[in-house]
Length: 289
Image 1: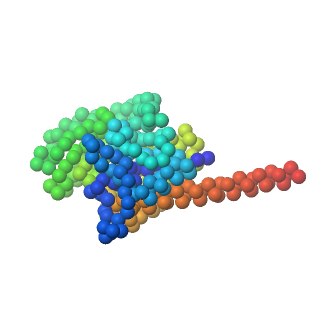
Image 2 (image 1 turned 120 degrees about the horizontal axis):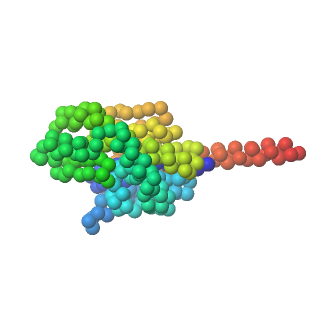
Image 3 (image 1 turned 180 degrees about the horizontal axis):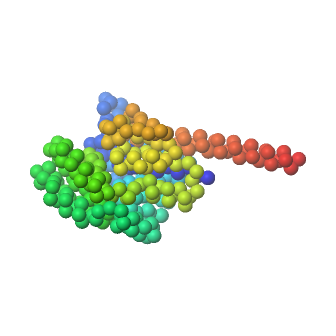
């Protein structure tokens, strides 16, 4: 039975230059590997050590990138290691199998959204009407599933975010503030549902997860073990739960630590499973005698 590792990407495993948090002296900064280029410019990084750990993890577990990014945004990323057989995009709205959307999964998601929450157009119109152009830089709709704003964070009124969260809650949506982006996402649109489907398909008996934002909370709660870095929405609110480890590391070194924890746990499970198999074989042989 395989181990399934479902991890958020941005600010969990990969980091923009603004999110690296390289607080050490320059001479002691880790070597970095660029894993995403956008418009001919390097955009996302992990440490070279993390790249090696991720490659090893691909051999020890079923690694499933689990992101709020759209499929197009996800496909810009070039992670080290074997290409993942499964990936989850648009916060669970798309389940990719060998890089191709599973049409049946997507149709099921659309049906749940239509039944359980207010339509996207209503939410988008509210964002357009209530957000101030003084601090909004972009309005975006992702995969016709959810909406988000790109804002000037220092100008963003905290009260507006709180009011938006209450308004969205009453309509079956949730709000998440991540860096310069404010997401409005339907509650039924979850990473955890897609991860459970991958676990079912692969027969995984142990699921590990990591994430940093409010949109990752359901993913962490659905896992057998989970980790969150020392930065992000979850850290800012001291969010925790049983089987969740809050790590002290922040920035790109948190991504490296998370991969160490994934790999150590997967390998420990494999050693224990191997020992159980040896004992079972021994017991069968003894019975035959």
